[in-house]
Length: 325
Ligand SMILES: Cc1cc2nc3c(=O)[nH]c(=O)nc-3n(C[C@H](O)[C@H](O)[C@H](O)COP(=O)(O)OP(=O)(O)OC[C@H]3O[C@@H](n4cnc5c(N)ncnc54)[C@H](O)[C@@H]3O)c2cc1C
Image (tube, rainbow, N blue to C red; front, side, top):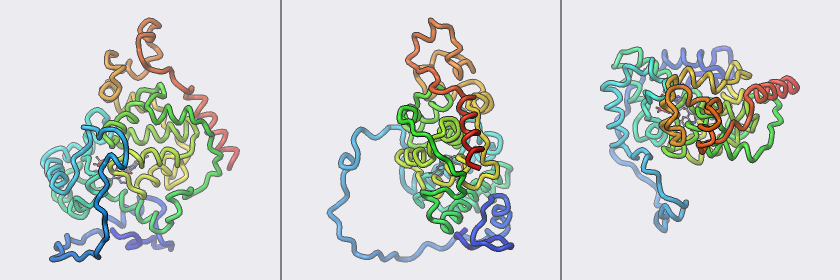
């Protein structure tokens, strides 16, 4: 739905809270697919040809990147509709199950149509289909916020007067997936390897950066933007702000505890072992707390101790926010 097409009845040019937006969005989002245009005229563009990839960046492309283009996007969407969408409601937060559509890059680049996705998911008439449609609405929700307040790509939507800490060593450990918290590090390594990260892992890693390390959300958003194949100014910046508590979350001071998140969303540790080869041999949920292994076993691991105590991080954050209120 176009930004600005629905606005709050009480006034204002955009919705600041998702749930009322979603109610209007579902009720009003009824248009069908437009016909493809017969012809597209583009202005003449002077070009010296496209630069080769090695002129743009160094290193080899990861073999785990998704394949681009409309054909790949349509195939993925067809496979998604044929089965997995039915389990989406139960599976979408299960990190190891990888039960989300992975359609985000195709939606971002326009390889598949969000209206087409909405129509097809509606036809699937499952609880999973409804849950999937709700996620598509988040995409439009963030776009209407950014269209109304373009400056929030770089500034707080709702300032909490944060004086973020500066700590280059901690920031680099986070980027490298070497914080010593396996669930955080697995998310960051998935990002490096696939140019994509599971939504639950995005929430955990972003909360860890902003609320445990108390580092500026812009620093995290920039790193995500560099590596994500679905990198999108509206979705990236506003989800970062949502997690940092400077955006549209109605509970801005909640902190996600990575150990509790791991217990809940990766109960057997399979997601962590998939992305952290150095912890491969630790069976079951013990992989989430390698510091609890006996000293001889730990000494053999090429894996750091936690860079911060979780309670210290959360206390620092709460005190800083209280002070700024
Ligand atoms: C810190 C952070 C940064 C993020 N950065 C981006 C980004 O740059 N680009 C991006 O597309 N999404 C971003 N997201 C949202 C979400 O994580 C991804 O859209 C989702 O993980 C993509 O996987 P999927 O296609 O399997 O999603 P599914 O769960 O299958 O959802 C279907 C589609 O709905 C949309 N969607 C789902 N969740 C969200 C959401 N929270 N906000 C907006 N749209 C959503 C996406 O287009 C997605 O493809 C971010 C989330 C967080 C917490």
